[in-house]
Amino acid sequence: MVGKLYLVATPIGNLEDITFRALRILKEVDIIAAEDTRVTLKLLNHYEIKKPLISNHRHNEDKNEDFLISKLKEGKNIAIVSDAGTPGISDPGEVIVKKAIKENIEVISIPGACAAISGLICSGLDTNEFVFYGFLPLNKKNRKEKLEELKTENKTAILYEAPHKIKETLKDLKQIIGERKVTIARELTKIHEEFIRGEINEIIEKTENIKGEMILFIEGAKKVLLDNPLNSMSVEEHYKFYENQGLDKKEIIKKVAKDRGVTKNEIYKMFV
Ligand code: SAM
Image (cartoon, rainbow, N blue to C red; front, side):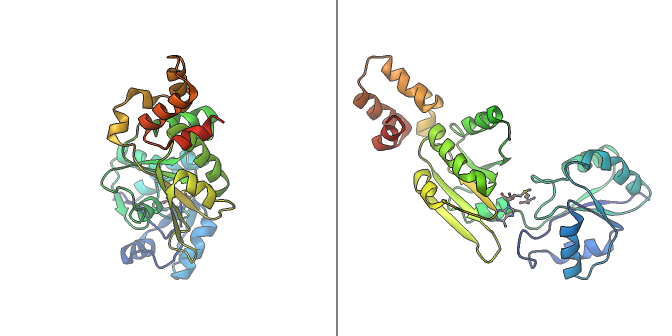
């Protein structure tokens, strides 16, 4: 009999955030494939679970798949866990799931904590429709392209971000998309859990020396603003468009601000 592949969500900070079913599955499987075996060992020790652990991280995920599939075919049941939260969400999982499906191996989801969803529901932004961006690309050009997408994104956007990059990301966002409501969800489920909500400018001020794990939620672009084709340009291009029409600086700022649904002061600050 072929084994089953379980994708098991683990806590994102508070060790109590794990389901009874997840604990039972971790006790029952033959092997646990963990992103970092040392991190998972702490969780297993806490719940007095003893199980063979193998390492399955981003850098060996491709090589590991053959080994894991061979074990599944031998009839072993395997649980995939990441350091925190739901495997496959900005974490290892996707590669082995795709391979298992190709091999007709049953894949079972054991739901639980996911930072993106846990933060979204308290963000104060629309939860009806949202889009998950995960981490921004490291490559500068690709990163800029992703941020540009947010100009016309009308759903709440979710970005995982590192604390040392958050300030730069907020400044870039301000430059590219103008003013929008954002929420930072920090240290979810931990002692210092915090939600910082406001317009991008206010949040930039509040995030000086910010630390810990965090997620950035960005309000969707408003339909009325999306309908104006000028708003798909960068603020600089938008400004130049009116400049080329011979308008003076004061008039241009007034028009750009109106088009983009922000204050004249916001636009003024970008050009002085
Ligand atoms: N698979 C995980 C999940 O289900 O959320 C995400 C893993 S990803 C490598 C790690 C990122 O998730 C962090 O950089 C941060 O953006 C976010 N994150 C994880 N735990 C968090 C927490 N307790 N509070 C806020 N953000 C968290």
